[in-house]
Length: 194
Image 1 (cartoon, rainbow, N blue to C red):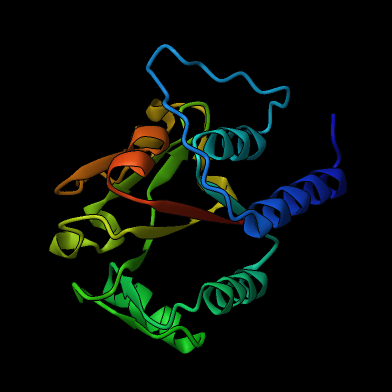
Image 2 (cartoon, rainbow, N blue to C red; image 1 turned 60 degrees about the vertical axis):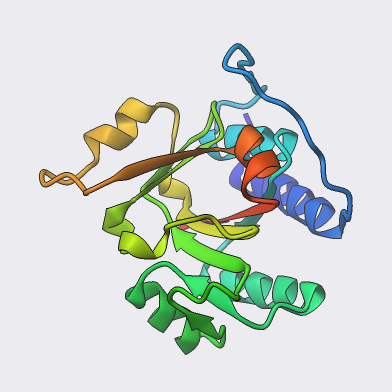
């Protein structure tokens, strides 16, 4: 069993190697493909699954590190503007130095929060409760999702059990493998440890 410091070292190595890599991995995932991790930690299982599906995983120890990593990625990729998928997220991003709009079709980088992540399948669950409403009518070419480590689960049932009594208008499951190939060209998941 890995200690937290060992886990953090592994996640940082994985994050750095993914950010340094210019190659885009395309892997077709079928429903029969069941990913089995050597770790029982849902964060590690998801990081491995996302990476094998062509996504990029970035582990952040806190919010300060989250914004440092977002800014470093933006500088490296020369991104200047983002579509935020809620007014609260837009305000939060702007307060931390990231220029964002709500639904500008000329901006090809989008940032969203999520309801939860299903580690074994690599699925990211986004609902209208994150404030996306009708602003998420189509996916941008580059999608960034911010999640807390506590939002990574081992099953869909766990996410559904944590939904509010009043269900959101819509629930969207982004399965990483096929979506990255078809709609989203690049998917980054930033996971913040509490």
